[in-house]
Amino acid sequence: MQALLGSTGWLPRAEALVRRLFAYLPQQPGYDKWLRTLAELLRRGTRILAKNAFRLRRTSAA
Image: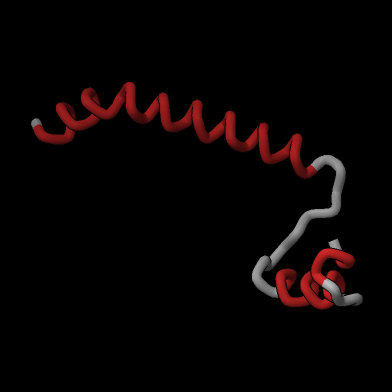
């Protein structure tokens, strides 16, 4: 890639510029597993709330 662009040393500079755009880049190997587990938990919670929303609205309106 550097040969195509005709300059050297652009990759470390690009990394330094891009890194400040992201507050946290995880390095831990279990982060992806934790994130998938959290996503499933949020899906389940949302499904439960959606399923019970009509019942909750009817009891609070009465």
